[in-house]
Length: 314
Image (cartoon, rainbow, N blue to C red; front, side, top):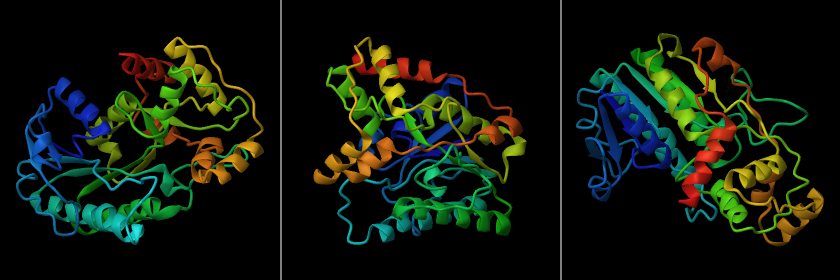
């Protein structure tokens, strides 16, 4: 039995659907009874993930956990101290789940962390790798890094097999956030000042991530390892806009505006963080997972964009 936390989320839905397609025994963890009615597999309701969560029912008969559930960054966080809240869910909640899993006889836990553990930006042709010294920026990245450390402690103390996966931006049907906002703007024919955005970013299509997580759940060599992952084709935002327009069957209406002007405009509009993410480079080296687990993403970047574009149009 495989337990998937965050089963009703963007990645969770894709993961559960693929596990069921492969005839795996799956149980999902959802936050509310409202999600139960729409579930396509047995589910357990866990309303809050923290250091006191009762996992006894959800973990019954489970051999592998794929832990997706997390407190995610939002544009305007209303928490008095966001770091405290991120640590409560992402760090303490994850450590408690691992401890309960070990007691229940779970063999392996796959933790979906974030490339933000490595940092927010790469420079001068650099690529993040698993051997880099972690440099998390912001409450979310810090909480994820602390969760990774906690999981390694639990693994040493209990023998629970832990696999950590750090994805970059995940895109695909039903995605949210900046990527879908970009897709929607291009689909509407809105001119975007991004023709000069020559930064380079790694992305991962959701079903590529799903495939990698399933490999990490089953491959003997994955135990105790940390993996960075991507589609394998890094692109600039300017090229990404062009590829998205092509996938949507739209004209590429992006135009050139000097990046320095964009940053000034973003500062005036109080959108500096968004522009930094849009114009900054973030590349990952995923040779480790490809070499150790013989993993090859089943979809190319072009295929992932086309499937996402088809979903948006329909």
